[in-house]
Amino acid sequence: VEELKAIVDSLQVKCGNKLPEPYIAVCPAKPPTPAAAPAKPADDDEDDVDLFGSDSE
Figure 1 (cartoon, rainbow, N blue to C red):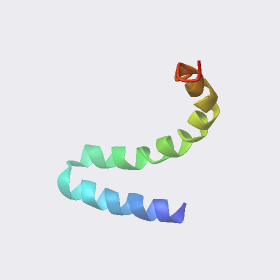
Figure 2 (figure 1 turned 90 degrees about the vertical axis):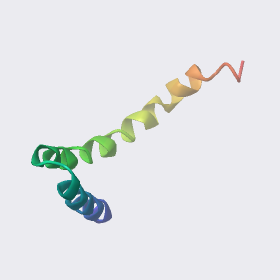
Figure 3 (figure 1 turned 120 degrees about the horizontal axis):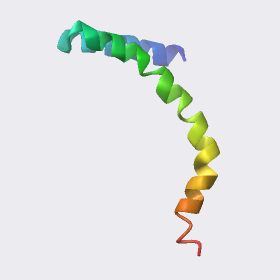
């Protein structure tokens, strides 16, 4: 988690150099979304297998 925070901080610096201020607020908002996303697909993996189940049929 600390490593991710360091990466986010470094990305915020890069964003700040290239993007206007309104986008800087978007950078910190993105990390929690990907962090929460992997947990949901893990549960949905079974459903995904069903979607690609044409191979198993």
